[in-house]
Amino acid sequence: MRRDTLKGYLFISPWLAGFLLLVAVPFIDSIYLSFTHYDVISPPRWIGAANYKRLVMEDPFFWKSLAVTLKYAMIAVPLGMVFGVGLALLLNLNIRGIRFYRTVFYLPSIIPLVATCAVFTWMLNPQMGLMNSLLRLAGVEGPAWLTSQPWAFYSLVLMSLWTVGGSMIIYLAGLKDVPASLYEAAVVDGAGPWQRTIHITLPMLTPVIFFNLVMDIINAFKYFTQAYIMTEGGPEESTTFYALYLFHRSWRYLDMGYASAMAWILFLIIVAITAMLFTTHKRWVHYGR
Image 1: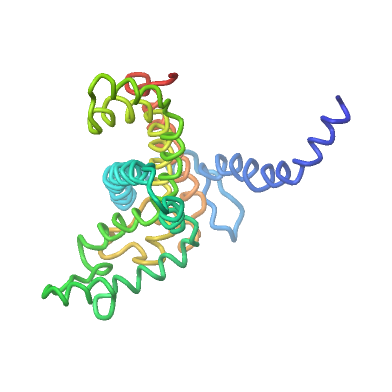
Image 2 (image 1 turned 60 degrees about the vertical axis):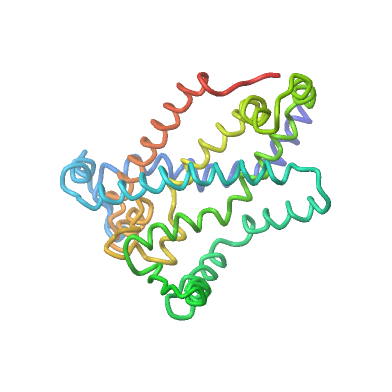
């Protein structure tokens, strides 16, 4: 048994080493750095809670970036869940070629994000992009999607639906786990498709919905790549998400101590929201059969 245990640890030792060196040590080190002034070039200088005080009381961009991120989470997360569940319900139908359709809708979620951003930047180009070209055919002059307000922000929201296939697969797996006997009993009682969906499918799917809700909210607060590549935070900071502002503070201004404080505030916000979700999930999440 000891020999098997040792072999197991040896097999996972590369992951353990990577976790300790690249995750655990920086995680702990960032706590100390958040209480210092550190510009990478000179050694960290202890300043106590000055970074946190400056963030909360003196930095308007902190609150603005947090507001942009909260707005995105409140719009994109529910929208993505509705589309994900709806798509899973459609792809759960027993029709010809359903495996092909599932593959088609899932593929966008595994395309590299940088490539996706490049494609959407071209599609949303106001002069020669696909979106405005189609609108011109209908006699409508489209806006400057990524360079004007409020279109830049809502363009990123709509773009988030492109990768809804990832959550769709999880919803689809949850649908496959719903006992067929419940549907059979409902049919015998005279329930129609809509009644079966409302009273059987959605309640039985709530554990999966809860999981995706937590993960989607965490990902929304970490939203960075699309805004960094496509809008760079503009126009007029309307797409300066919290993670993007944190990146600017750390690598554009080399204010690592300040950025570490921002990272820990973000961590505490995510923990608080996740804990709140876990305190309320017993009221609407149904486990068991």
